[in-house]
Image 1: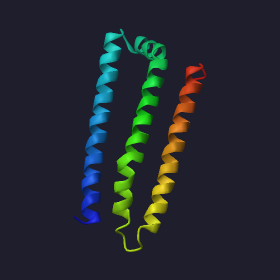
Image 2: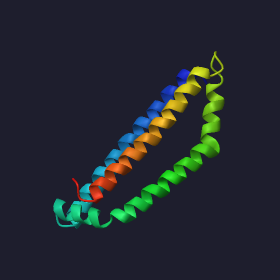
Image 3: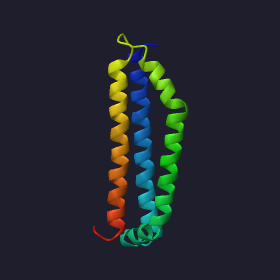
Length: 120
């Protein structure tokens, strides 16, 4: 299968996964606010569960890093090296993307800490 075919398939899978996650997230907020007696109660519930959510996110980050460094990155690099230039440009883009993802995670967690300290 060509890169173009792989890209279309990956784009479709990513779009469907995003829509499913958005739907599940909205359902969780709706059900949580109903069970907590309203949106204010739900906000208090989330605030009290912040340490557990931090532990959960850190675990997810660790699992993602292990999966990426374990096998996924090797497969992507192998796939990118099939390019006409040996994948040099694509590998540079991949490195920039990896750096951007790490920076995004750090910024999100810094904001979460800022919010947890009551600055929102």
